[in-house]
Image: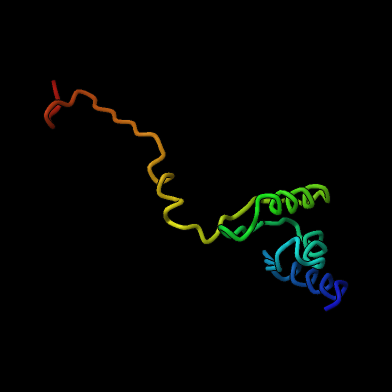
Length: 107
């Protein structure tokens, strides 16, 4: 499909739909993907664990930012559970006990 035809299709879809999601090949591996990103209102990078290198991710983000594209962020996909376990215990815990002793209210 020519990029001009795709642009017309996208314009028509935007008129009829609230959201149009374009799933593209990897950003740095396909020239058409960069052109599609320019047509989109915003972009969202999906990064698979152990598939993308940090330098490639930074290059893609730099390219999007240089073109003035609105990047919504990144989605970290296919994460292994072992990686997430340390984060599961992260957080703050607060406990408030107003006048309680042994499960009874003090008067």
